[in-house]
Image (tube, rainbow, N blue to C red; front, top):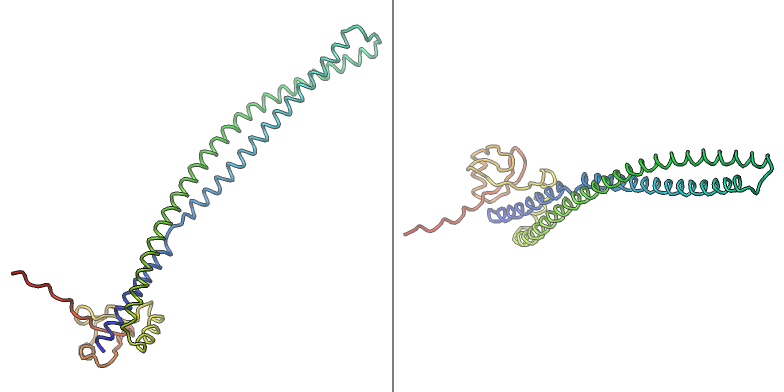
Length: 245
């Protein structure tokens, strides 16, 4: 029985190793915070570009309108002073149109100045947003690459544990495995503990009665820790190193 329990403990070692790898994998940082910052930077850059394009379009439209108004004003002015129109009412109407168009041109010129200043500010905002986006993307890319590297390392280790567990399982009594699995579910993943320091359960660290230790050493029955309820075993002593001559 001692050998069977020792073999079962070897299975526990692999299961504990897998549990630890699962824990490590669960706490890996995939860059969720960096991703949020990156997405926000994308949205900000998109908004800044849209605002820059809108202001650019409005400036072009205003400049075109100003040119059209000026062309129209010059046309009326040429007629007004060309001598072809002599009717006083027509001349008065033309004069009023020229003055109105001149005022509108001035209004458009003022608007163009404001838009040009605004466009300069929008351009700076666009460049700043693009710079922030590049930085956020670089941070997220680096973090995610590190996550992928760490995740791959955990997967490689997990695969090795799977192979080792399968090998360890070959030497374990199926009936003991069933009991072990039930205890593992009920005892935080630890179904069997080794006796450590001569008289303590490695699972709960509590001292074991000497009579219980004696039964474990005899090894004819499966013994449970009276405190935590886990199976107990005594591991074989490691082979001693040969003495140097």
